[in-house]
Image (cartoon, rainbow, N blue to C red; front, side):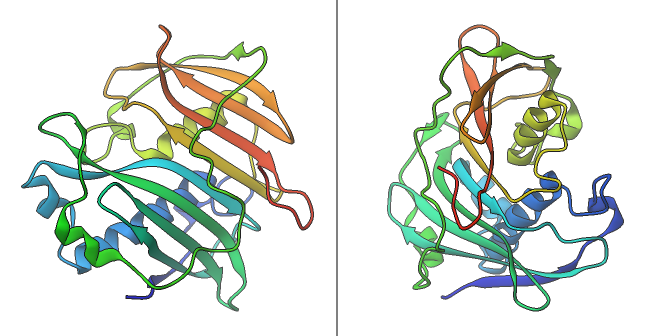
Length: 247
């Protein structure tokens, strides 16, 4: 298998106040692409749920060159460039109709045993995802993101039903939304940028997330804490400089 792709057109409901695809909708497209691939391979949500298994995202790196505008036609692709019994490494790309690369992403996924409540070995039948396509040319996937310096606590947010997905915990894209809204800025709306996310524990309905913001090189780290020493996710927003990847 090389790559899995589907084509779409940017809808009004997916745009932010600038008329371009919102950051959360961008991440939704990436997630939808891998979900569509799973369904077509017969390895979708229902198949895994019957065995109390789920693929859980451990970390993202998403580089945004440009966000498509309302009505633009796009092509979304994904491929698993490394698959072991411990994890899967998967790339994503959103391209414009003319083939221009708009968004690139790399990610690490872990297989989760929902019945036992911990990570488990990747099931043998999941090795079908392995692709010969190489990793995208982009910055490194940092699996050990850490905030440093003195942080500033921001307004807490309570998890509501619309933040959950079929696994009954907060959807991956929602953590990025919480962090961006906590900063109070249209993050990556008008500039080339990079979003890196390290997921540490799952948030569920009615959990309270307490964001703490730390300045970092060319941007901000936002740690989404539980208010008592634990962390749900760390989200890093950085500008991309000309001809450079963020790090």
